[in-house]
Each structure stands twice: as structure tokens, then as C-alpha cells.
Image 1 (cartoon, helix red, strand yellow):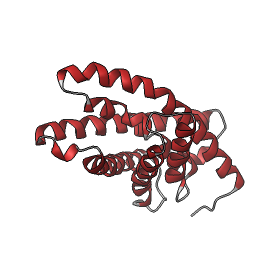
Image 2 (image 1 turned 135 degrees about the horizontal axis):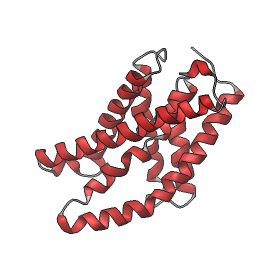
Image 3 (image 1 turned 180 degrees about the vertical axis):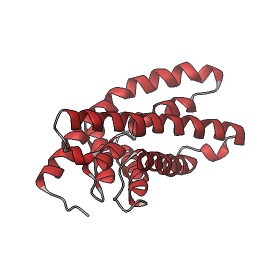
Image 4 (image 1 turned 90 degrees about the horizontal axis):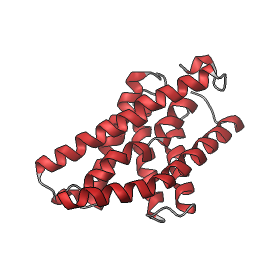
Length: 187
């Protein structure tokens, strides 16, 4: 297992800053989408549709850096950046960032940080979805929704997290390898 080096710390910080700015920029999109879905009673879907973007720093850091704790640290630092830029959820963003990062980290830990391919990313997206959904059952009152609506929310979240935390993460990693930013052994 790799140890942390200065290069890794710099890389996770750059990824977190970049993703934190994206998280913050997504806030008005969320507000508009939630407002558009509210009249038809589907406002919670706004969170599910966009959650894949908000959790992307964890899988991206974990998949690129490949060191225990990278996914959690990447997601948490991204949340710190979003909060300091004035994100709409304030300091509670830090709790969400830690939970989202932990969800991604569980997927990488399950493989012992030894395999990094589509299967690991798929596992990470699944664990991220389950952990964050459990958190929203408690924090956001999802437990009061009917089962069919809960299933809809879960499936939309899973698809969003899979696309952004899985597919897009893999594509970004491949681009970084082709640009010689990452070694080819990072495939």
C-alpha cells in the first residue's frame, strides 16, 4: 500500500479546490431545479439528480491517488471550499462532505486499495449511494416518504452517482494519463 507523499497531498488539494468550485457553482442550478420540480411535488428529485456531481471529488481522489483516506479527504476538502465560497448549506456542508467521502472510501477499502478499474468504481458508487441515502433518511426526512417515492429517489441517486462518480471519473483519469499527468500504471 502506498504512503502519502507531498505530490499526493498537492494533487488531492488541487482536485478538492477544483471540485469545490464546481460544487459551489452548482448551488443555483439546484435552487432552480428544486423550484421547477416543487409544483409537481418532486422537489426532492433535484437533490438526487445533482448528487452525483456533489459526491464526485471522493471517487475522483480515491481513483487517482489510490491511497487510503484519499476519497474521504478529497470530498471533505471539496466541501470546505464550497462552504468558504458561500455555499447555500453553510457549515453543514462539512458533515455532508465527510459522509460522502466516507461512502466513496468504503468502496475502495473493500478491494483493499489493490484493484482500480470499473468494478472498483462501480462498488464505490454503490457504497456512496447507500451511505448518503441512509444519511438523507435521517437528516432530510426521507424516512417519511412512501416506499415507491423512496425507490425512485434511490434509483435516480444511484444513476447520478454512477455517471459522475463512476463514468466521468474514469474518463477524467484516462485523460490525465494520456496528458502524462498520471503514470500509465494508474489504469
